[in-house]
Image 1: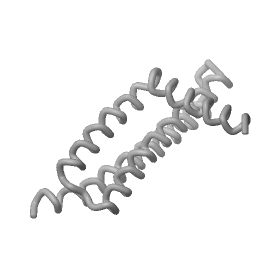
Image 2 (image 1 turned 60 degrees about the horizontal axis):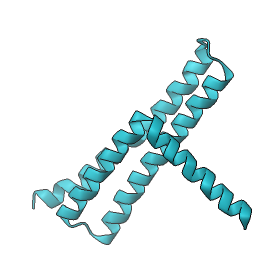
Image 3 (image 1 turned 90 degrees about the vertical axis):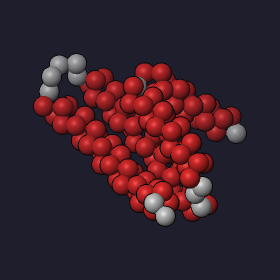
Image 4 (image 1 turned 30 degrees about the vertical axis):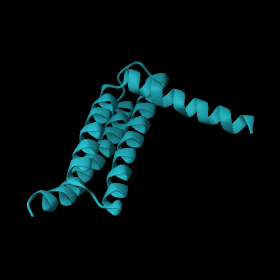
Length: 116
C-alpha cells in the first residue's frame, strides 16, 4: 500500500512543479477556470460536462507530457541538436493539435446553446 501512496505523492509533486514552472500550464489553468465558469453559466447537460472535463484534463495531461519530454531532452543535451529540437517540436505539436481540437469541440457544445 505504501508504494501506491508514494506513487500518488510523486504524481502530485509533478503536477505542482509543473504549475509552478510551466507558463503554459498556468495559462491552461486560467482557461479551465474560465471554461468551467462559462459552462456553469450556460447550463450544460451531464454528457456535455463529461466532455468538457475530459478535454480540460486531457489538456493538462498533454502539457505535463510535453514538459516531461522537454526536460528529458534538456537532460540529454544542452547544446543545440536538430534531433532534440525535433523531439520538442513534435511534443509541442501534439499539444497544439489537442488544444485546437478541444476549442473546436468546445465551440460545438457552446455555440448552439448561446444562439437558440
